[in-house]
Picture 1 (spheres, rainbow, N blue to C red):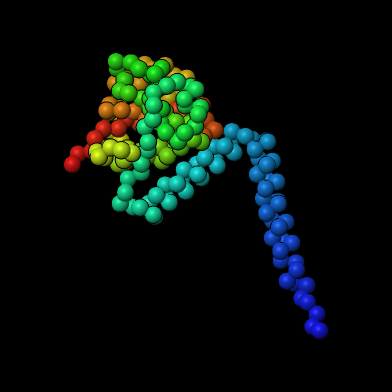
Picture 2 (cartoon, rainbow, N blue to C red):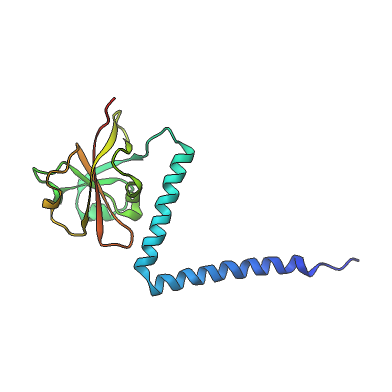
Length: 172
């Protein structure tokens, strides 16, 4: 009976050791520098989402779903929908819809002015026409004069900043 090669049994062990080392490194990073790790991993996630969208459906705009109106409780339910935030109702600001970045809101972090967007259930294609980045907790007055028919909002990963994008129907 021929002897088994030691090489065949060493490769899986080395592979497992590499995976464990990578996991321990990531764990150490999240413990030592949690916000930096969140920012880096969030940026990677957004870049992968954008690249995937462009590769799978390059002619289709990204899609979001607008949900019910509400406040923090509805937002924290993490349904994947953008909640119309009652707290931002102000005559100088269009209706504002928000989603946590880790609940589907991060889709907007890769968008910029000119990005075409589909809203689930709407026949109209929208376009990003204005953008604002503010500190978390900024008053609604920071959005005074923002254009568009509606505004979508999420927070940046690992930062105390919020991103607001104004959407308006795209020119046909």
